[in-house]
Length: 275
Figure 1 (cartoon, rainbow, N blue to C red):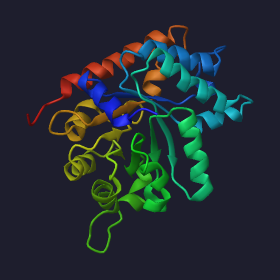
Figure 2 (cartoon, rainbow, N blue to C red):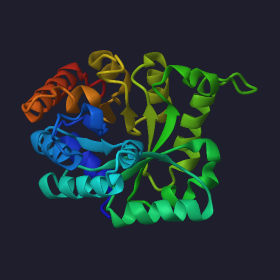
Figure 3 (cartoon, rainbow, N blue to C red):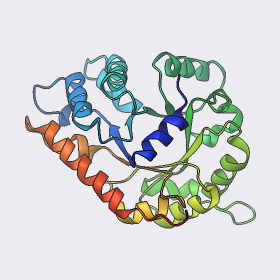
Figure 4 (cartoon, rainbow, N blue to C red):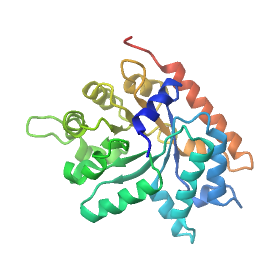
């Protein structure tokens, strides 16, 4: 496996900050197009724009309910990315984190498929994430402040000293969990004040920001809240608004146009605060 952080740094040096989510839903794919072909064509159309691709594990499992080998589609998708966009890292969004042999099985899948980074659920505690955190080359994006409306119930719950739980997660990841220098945080673009607060806590640590596009978050304010002092450190994720930009035969061209629009908006919104 290659070093995710070095790969991400190379993408940032090219001023690429758009993470393209790959969430295959059979009913939304253009009629007559197989998911495996659909995803390949999306990747082909956006390979020179994407900073990274983020296949969502659960969506591929959903294909299995339709009689499709969803895991096979996922593995093919990741192979295709390596073939046509070898410089673009893959973040497998599975919100993993468990104990014992469960983690062992996940790590084996990640390694055998040359996954560059994963998303992780911190609420099993740090020992439940150790098999991931201990692999220096593997990027670990830990859920901190998710983009869904109901996340307040837990993530903003105050601790005894009044600190919201999501802030404590950010602090602990920065100070204790990032011994290998391979951690980032998932912070939704739908909560800008919290996003800015997390950025202040974690310095230059990379932030993965879901919520752009269909969920309604705006690019400009998200960039301003998420970027570090160098104008880097952010990965703005858009999924449905790109891959389902059209259901007509021109869907690859439509996906490319939307990805390019978002990329250019991100670049124009950057402001380098420090040298």
